Length: 51
Ligand SMILES: [Zn+2]
Picture: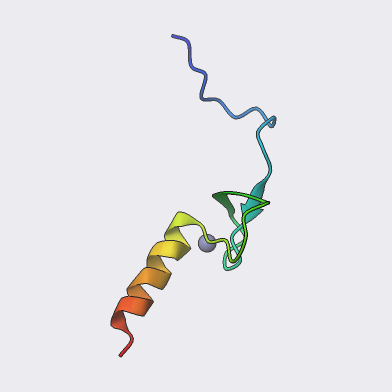
């Protein structure tokens, strides 16, 4: 099996989630607020419930 998907510490720097400090899928050069998929989903739920 050849698996090229292993992260061995040589990947690009990812921006931290502003809420939980976990690495996001966005690069550090990403503009604006960076959220991880989980927090992004939660924010979407909150926005959907506001009213
Ligand atoms: Zn998060």
